Length: 201
Image 1: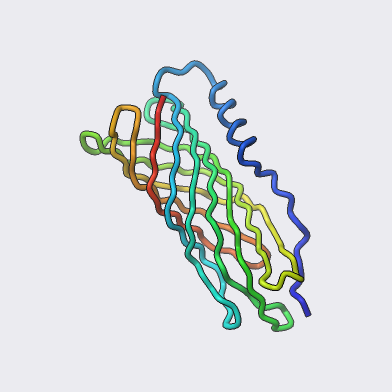
Image 2: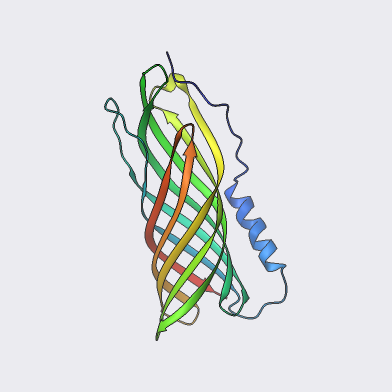
């Protein structure tokens, strides 16, 4: 008997529209001076905890990329919008009747965080942020006859980063972000570690 399918969940995540909307909102929040706005790009490895079954291949590692847009609210406090694509993980589960099934988990999300940056040495800084993300998970069954199931949930999102200022406007460094994802009965943490660059203007 095929696994029970979830009704499709229509995600409202649309990368170009969302990024443009956030940028417009941030730009319209008030007058700004040079350096109040920032854009960033990052990529690296990630790991998502998924369940595994003996009859299907399991892979909890993948690669991710993210795009950020920020606005300095006051002093060292920043508001940041982030879009991320965590790639795909392979896992499986067992139906109530005991039938094993496997497939791929595809995870992406859009979040808003508030954070701060601290200068720890000449040119070096540590940044931390926390907020929430709308995370969409789509599970594609190994057996294409079963189709797919998807779910979008609101999850916590937090991160920390170490960066070096190459110029007053350009920073490069290492970021670590963590959130969660869920679809059907599968749920687990998502860890993302990578390199990132941020330009302020």
